[in-house]
Amino acid sequence: MPSRRNTILGFVAALTLATWSGPAPTQSREEALGAQEHPKLVQQYGGEYRDQKVNALVQTIGRRLAQAAGADVRWTFTVLDSDVVNAFALPGGYVNLTRGLLALAKDEAEVAGVMAHEMGHVLERHSTSRVNRSTIAGLLAMGVGAVLGSPEIAQVLGLGSNLYIASYSRGQETEADEVGVKLLQAAGYDPMAMATFLETMNRYAQYEAAKSGKKKSEGFDFFASHPQTENRVAHAAELARKLPPGGTRPVEPYMNAVNGMIWGDSPENGFVRGNSFVHPKLGIGFTVPQGFSLLNGAAQVAAKGPGGAIMLFDGGRAPGVRDPADFLARALQGSRTQGVQRMDINGLPAATAVTQAETEQGQVDARLVAVSVGGDTLYKFTFLAPPGSLRRYDPAFEQTAMSFHRLSQREAQSYRPERIRTLPVRPGDSVEGFVARMAGEPNAEDLFRILNDLPPGTPVQARQVVKVIAE
Image (cartoon, rainbow, N blue to C red):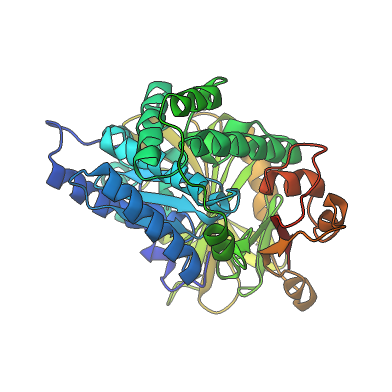
């Protein structure tokens, strides 16, 4: 979440669950749909990661795979500035992968495996049907203003696209794996790379679940949008074994590219640390309850909780609006609300209101909280709950809102970005020695072994290059 260049009333919004209708889209319509939705997805996932080395690697792999595909598709390959381990494909050839995912690979072929898998979704037109079912988000089409009788409410309820992006079916995942493995082989990569990287991502998902106490499918990661089956890794390996042996697994280009890459959150977007979000440059922070997963985007921060609860946070300059209660009253004018109540949050003037919205899927309950930090700068929480369940989730929503605070100078200075460093293994080096460099990471040895595809108990080998996390 970078410095807010837009006013609060300028944020993208939506609550209607519109879908594409009519006949199957033509190629040009697929391109138009992808071009329309791609910037929204990029923004939700922290914007583009503008690192020359990383992008050069991904573009090189992309050109190699595109040539092997031989399809009449204008491919666009984008690295997202997010630590969430995920990849997305949109109609028209848009393939996106996060730097969090890139960090887990062990060589160029494994990165190619993920990209080939996503290209498989495009070539099989899964991404078109997926967007048709969710309009990328299911919540990005405008129209809620008409439903609520107030155009401003559509801007207040700034829902992010990826919270509701539809998952692929298991059959579609299998098809994309099959296309991806063949693409890998045709591009000259080891087709087994897809299976090995799926196994690494599965290990990392288990690591994250154990660290946070959540199930693998409850967050925003790859397996939340790409269903995992027990035999998927074995199936990908079986597909690879059926192809002629051979193919490359370049290590050096990959290690050179990721050396120095940010691990975790980007300073420009603030930091997610466990259940807390802090933005040292803006001087603010808040904490969500246990059981919620945080996603730090370029325009907003989102949290997804159990039972369909959603939290969204954004803000910035609102010229001419200094009173949070006045802001909510004007924004919600004409909608069904329970009135605006003034409140105090850690010495900051704030206000809250409850409203409802009708969508094609039914009603959504919403609690809005606006907080002034001085001048004409306001921040806003949007808390969403399934119909009739707001009272159940209100304690969690209130706990989050009341945790909002201004950072002290000391607190702001304590947050620094972490980066991946690639190091050669020299004679006498040990796993324990490298793990000591990552002392600040939870379960550091487990993470080190996942990052470097080292099974438990396996030592590092001389002349090997390994990745560590360091400030």
